[in-house]
Length: 228
Picture 1 (cartoon, helix red, strand yellow):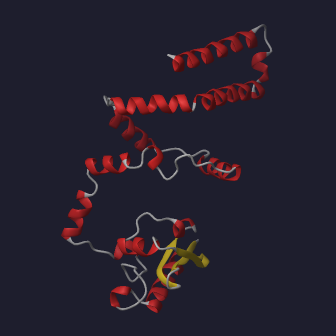
Picture 2 (cartoon, helix red, strand yellow):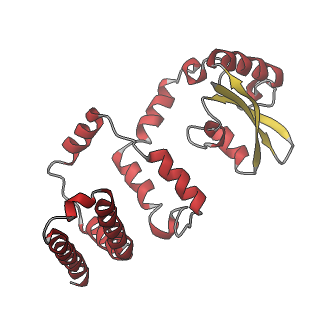
Picture 3 (tube, one colour):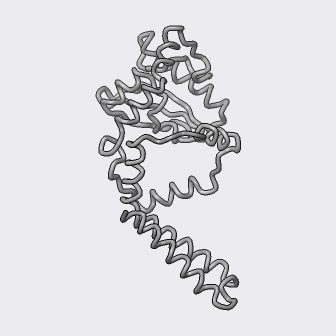
């Protein structure tokens, strides 16, 4: 299934973008948007789902029809769509100058600069609190999600011999201290869950007491590391 949506600019109450996606999520995303789209969206816009029960082929055809209906701004219309639709970005050919700009904007130095610009209070999610419903939704979304073995191996190879600088170490230390209680509570809940799910393991002799003692020692070790 696929959806067809349009973005409506609030300053003029006019459509300025037509798009498609496999789910409604794409209509809310701001990544991979053109500079023209971002310039208008920064002033405020609304999202309207036009169709939500299309096949992918039908969505491609509808996208062409609606872009033709409103017209692209490049040719005197209303929309900032880069292509005529029906093929997504596959119908777009970048010039050599654009390719070089894209290459220059993705260097390690640029990525590091962008990353540092969003640290701490500069991060849009800094001190955000999520509702229980939102947390449950995120948990269900990621439950059972696993990276392909190729991706895991690629990450492992990338980190072999990698040394963290003092700034990264300090950040990790601060993060651990701020989240100490949550980590310890998570460990305790996990331990209790194991006990409830496998009661037979704790029936024989004095095993449960030994395991509890072991767990308490581990907690003390963790706390001790924080206090040093």
